[in-house]
Length: 190
Image (cartoon, rainbow, N blue to C red; front, side, top):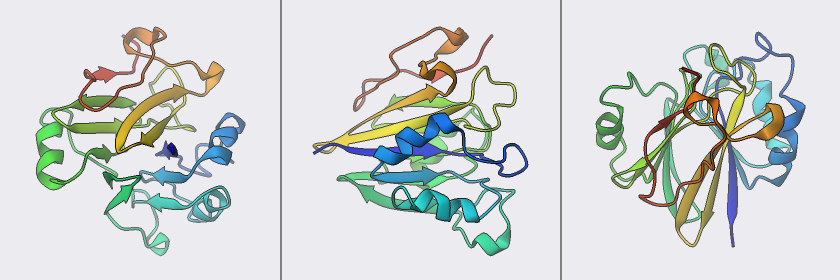
């Protein structure tokens, strides 16, 4: 049986948007799990997301203390070990830093930069979904999907506008990776 997790981060509600984008809702309706990698800002968003599926979330640098979110979470999803943190630090050295911090994780989800990132190398999949509400300097609002089946995981980053997959330079790309099969890709226009 295949499991689906919808991954979002940096929603900054209500500062950057009054609500989640309508284009995200069909994915939330099909989700088995929703991951939020921090900076939700309004803790009531967790209740809204929980109406669709169970939610796991971490504290972002802009989340209020009353949200009572942990800095990190580590858990199993469909037999795959997942870790989540808001700020993974600078791009340089990220992979080694995350491997040291989350030694058992197959997937590490993070946010903070609003820059979508998907990299599957050396047995660790690094995933930043970008933001569905605050794209900053990115070409599109984005989110990610994690699919787990038979202990294997694949991920994709999707743009909300037109729901097309993007890669370096904004060119469409099939952005699915399976265990150990990916190459580093940063989704941003040059």
